[in-house]
Length: 151
Image (cartoon, rainbow, N blue to C red; front, side, top):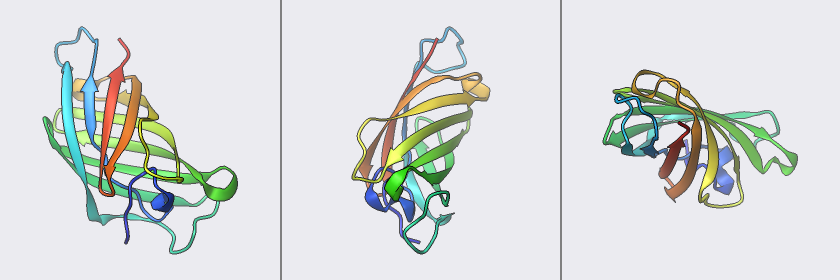
């Protein structure tokens, strides 16, 4: 299956990688002050239609995550909006110290820069996480995500 970055026009066929930069104002000593992760697409993970997606159809993706922590991410996006130019995506990042979940909307008009995602929760070292993630496509198989947690 062909893959492209999450904010590109072809994202509906398949989605790109996910990377994290995490910062927090939390007083909880188990949550790190900063965390930089880079993820690369996993070619054997993902699904999508073999045609231009229609509203309501879904696309899935998965990536290997490395850096200050390691693990995987998995996501699913549902095509929404007029002209099939948008999708709403749910992403789960499973790391060795816990899990982070995020929800956001992407446009298919080109590479994304600082596309906002809501941090909807977490477990382990990221228990109760909330905040905003800004997603930027690094290339067709790598994406950076800067997360600011609410204290």
